[in-house]
Figure (cartoon, rainbow, N blue to C red):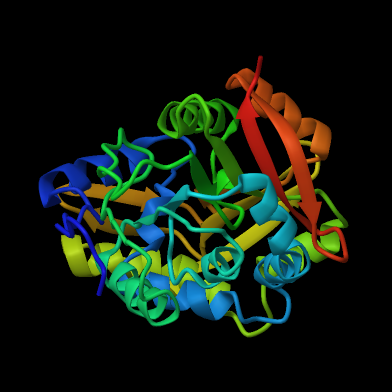
Length: 323
């Protein structure tokens, strides 16, 4: 495998004492909340892959259809000799569709929090692109990054952020992340980012409430993880998943609801949950083209190109530095 500087630093979770402090602080908040990165332990990552296969979850199918229709055009915009730095690479299925059209890519730099899916994606990519230099980073992409030295000088560094993960950040956090990308791409670089679009409420809500209940399992796995890793005593049957679309805010709001009044031990903290009390675990923002252009502008970026899937449910947008 053509892998350079592969030193795995598994930062999937902070040390136990810090993790406990983060969770206790969130459960003392009003309303209660837990950080969404807790979703993605090994079990959570596997469940998310199942979510992507559910008939209601349009996002992955729409993005793959988009790349099927426009990957060649996207590659022409990016140009030859690109270093592709990918945030949250996962299994990199969409990345392969893009790399198939890129001319003489310099390197692929996949960044993934969990080392297991990163290794798997690298193995798959090596099969398709045996000559492609791969320079993985097992870190949290929201933190300051030190990108590896490229095997040769790239014409352009492109930060690739597929999926709709930018929607999991509020406006302030998203602008901060875009500014960070702007620094990493350099003066001549760009950002290729997936942006989910506003659409009918029923379509959006169905995507986060699949009939098979996989998303509910994914959400409640967060509590199972805390039981495993911190010795908490969440009774999973005492909680349920709820996701609804707040049209005014333009976002899906995912909560874990307590089915009845109960107390849970989190370290030495006794946490009271009232019946029907909602604990926030994730936002997922949806954008109009105008919304996202305005967000990009706050980070010193301008939208140069937009591509849509055939049903115009989803977009890939190419951002460059504003003048």
